[in-house]
Image (tube, rainbow, N blue to C red; front, side, top):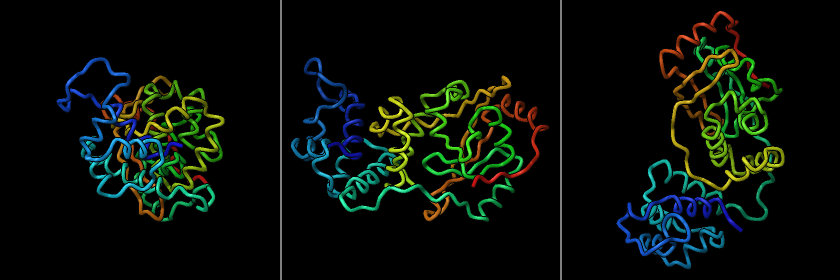
Length: 279
């Protein structure tokens, strides 16, 4: 049975080019990337042990082994953090753990007050599952007519994979889909992520399930949105993590070019300037 940690190590190994490590080419490879023997040698562990990690038969590698794998795979700081997180949730995946449950959706009053200070900017509070918990009138203005906020409890991940309008609204749909699925592994907790994956998988289809075990962090690029009125926006995203007890983040969308800034100004007259908190 595979594990998040094993899936990540295997996916990262497959994504690497052997020549970038100065490894000789001994003919056509049956699979892309590094061979297990090559990665094991670079990490200083046995091929058998690496195989057990990748196949989920060893769920508790030591910190020294994790560091060796991170070095051997040339992980950057973000990927190293993700590797340690996956090791933590993999090691804790045992019988008797708490049953999956939906996350807390309450947003603290001071966070709502911070959103009011950001008016008329485009900002919202979310969690790693994609729940849209609160937002400014600017965010509501930009999302109007897209279908994202139509649900009683809006969720960006559910919208991306189940609403046909998402592929028109999001020109880089594959990029956003990769981001949303990757974020599921980052919280709010292993239990809530498990609950959400089990809830969404039956209705989201293969585009969702085939991404579940990819584990490679998607590139950080501007977010493109194609508004129903014909405007195309490009946004830089500032993601501000709230305290760990909240398991939420404040996301601010900033125009990435002058045409986006001008398009937003043309929409401003429709804004009522009211903060909406989703219960």
